[in-house]
Structures are given as C-alpha cells and as structure tokens.
Length: 368
Image (cartoon, rainbow, N blue to C red):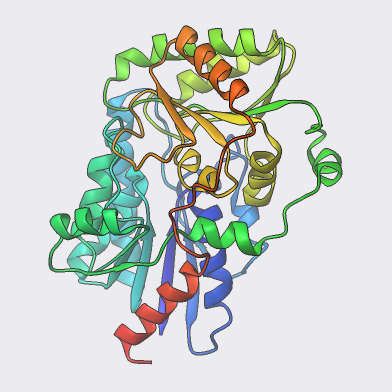
C-alpha cells in the first residue's frame, strides 16, 4: 500500500510524528511525506529539516506564502491548487492523509479531489468559529472518504458534514506524542535553546483572527499591553504565528516589542519535543492556538484562550476564555495564580494509541 502524508507547517508535522513512526514499521506500506507551505521557508525556520530526522522519503513542493492581505491568501490558494494539480497527475497513492484546517491543506486536497483518491482527514468535525480555517476543515472533510475524529462529540459533527464517509473516533495523535516521546529536562532545554525554564514562564502563541481581519491591530495592541505588565513577574516565550492573513503584521509587532522589552523571548520553532517540553514546565499558556486545547489538557496546564479563533472547540476546566482585553487577560492570570495547585487531569482526547488505531482502520479498509 502506498500512502502520502500531506504536511504544510511545523504544527501539523509535530502532530503527525507518532503516525509517521508507526507507518515506518510496516514493510508492506510505502510512505512518502509531501512537504509544502512554511516547511520550505527560511523565514519560518526551514522546518523541512525536522522531517528529515524521521525519513528521507520526502517530496517538496514550493508554494507561495505572502500573507499581507486577503488577496495574497486567495492567490496562494489558487497557485497551490495549480501546483498540486500537476503533482497529482504524475503521482498516485492508495491513501492520502491530510490533517487539520489550513488553507494550504485545503488547496492540496482540492487539487486531489478530481482524481478520486482515497483521502483520510485527521481532526475532522472540530469547529473554530473565529477563523476562516473552519470552512477549510469542513471542506476537506467533504472531499474525504475516511474521517478520523478525536472525541465522540466531534464524531457527531463530522457525520453532519459528510454522512457518506467512514468515521472513526481514534483520539488525538498529540496524546501519542505526549505518552511516547521523552521530553527534555530543564537542563537539556537550557543547553539546546539557551532558555532557563526555572524562571516562572508563560508560553504564548498568538495567531491572527481571520474572520474580522481589521480587528487584529487592536488585538495585537491589547495582547502586547498585557505581556508588558506580565514581564515584571514572568518570562514570556512567544512562538511566532503561521502564514495566515495578517500573520506578517502580528509577527512584526511581536518581534519589535521584544527588542525593547526584557523577559520576552521570541522563538520561530522549537520543534515538537522542544515545544512540548516548554509547555510541560511553563506556569500557564496565553494565546489562541489549538495546542492550548489538546496538549494542555494532558499535563494539565492552565490556558488563557484569547478571542474567538478557537470558539466552538470543546472547553475543559483548565481553559479560561477571555476577549482581547489587557485587563481581562491580567484578571485571568490572577485567577490562575489563586488556583495554581487545584487543577486535575483534563485529557478527553484518547489513550495515546491514535496512530495504531488509524493504521488499523486504513489497513482494514485496504484489505491488508
């Protein structure tokens, strides 16, 4: 059986890792990684190098990444579809695996849909009302023949999106990572990244909201206003945003802020192990990334979830949702400080065997 895994960013490949490792154990499965998007961007850390640590069977497709406005994103989608239409006409797979909701992923799958390939969509059924990615995720599901969901609640949603698909609750691959990967010690982390996690640390990722674009300027202002206050007490580590509309604007604001602020550290990409290690040892998280929902529930970690980007996801008790208001953010921090030691396990995303369940379902469907 020949399988392709589509990966467009550091974020999705980090999630894929246990699945990649599991596939590589099967002699009768020929696995190829198709890397595009920010993986091939120097500005975003050349994260294709991370993929090379796991396999040499990589096909690279250089796709456009300008993201200053809606026209740029629209162009990127069209150009990515065009590039992949040529690719799919030359390469054939028994199954193509796509994860998540990025517009680049939507474009790659859209180009594959006329070829009638078997597409399997991981993390189907989830909802993020504050991001245009929501429509991309559901569109990918509509073009897929197999949907893998992380909870039974998302299975119900996925069924409404595509009742013709085969749908399986396999949990979240991120839990496989957390249970199987050996994370770094604080000393190892210091040696690798020159960041001391013995200091009280906040881990933050702030992506633009892609529904109300014009509001991102004020959101960035309120976010950084809160960070300025928190810097007095905390070391704040900010990982930079993906290539969304206005992502470059937010990136520029954060980088400029950090130049003039003590205790703010900017990181392009930790890699999966580095990021999870930082999450393990941080005091809490602030931002609007999906890792604040899945991975943070495992440790568990308090999360201050900002704005509407992740609105619609399942909320566990460790998540405090607030608007982009510096005052509301500081109030949430005070609440966390009062309740720091009373957080119980929040994991609702499976037992850490998602990779094996996915492979079992695909091999059964393929008859091997």
